[in-house]
Amino acid sequence: MSDSSLTWEHRLRIAMEIAGTLAYLHSSASIPIIHRDVKTANILLDENFTAKVADFGASRLIPMDKEQLTTMVQGTLGYLDPEYYNTGLLNEKSDVYSFGVVLMELLSGQKALCFEKPQQSKHLVNYFASAMKENRLHGVIDGQVMNESNQREIHEASRIAAECTRLMGEERPRMKEVAVQLEALRVTKTKQQWSDQYPELEVNEHLVGVEMLPAQGDTTTTGYDSIKNVTRLHIEDGR
Image (cartoon, rainbow, N blue to C red; front, side, top):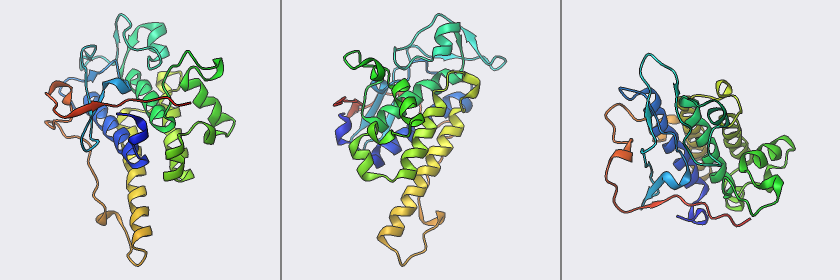
């Protein structure tokens, strides 16, 4: 699925659904699961643009009495947690880092890693971080996102992505926190749309359908399910 066909609302919902799935795997599964290869190629979209996290071939179970495992490093360049890469210590924050990269791709329409680009923009995480520090996000965010969102939404989503990709895992949020923040951002956006469309109505949270985080037993962990009529989330870097 080309990113050019995804509206900002689609992208925000996709990010929220991915975050919800990872939060379930980390915090609600009977045994915590680390996906270990979160990337856009492993996100499937159905005809309604509902996101499904796929390919659990690299995933690891984390025993309840442990917070991390020592493993042979596995993952995809551009999405790979640098702390995990350097230490071989795997924990849930490695998935958080990879998710942050995916969120940056959704925001920018650019690939995580592109060797054909100039040195300063080859690695999306570094390029994105520099743009935030220098207050020039407008040059990185995809034009469609810029046109369909407001500055608050862009900066909030960018802040979440930046926090997820901090170098030190202990400084990154948990996926459950990320899912809640993205849900809040989406609900606020929906309320604003209602206010714009029906200014005579007082819109509150009771008028807006809120999707809850996946409960145990939910089929959100669809990497294990057979999925029909889906396409992979694809970032077509036009920059």
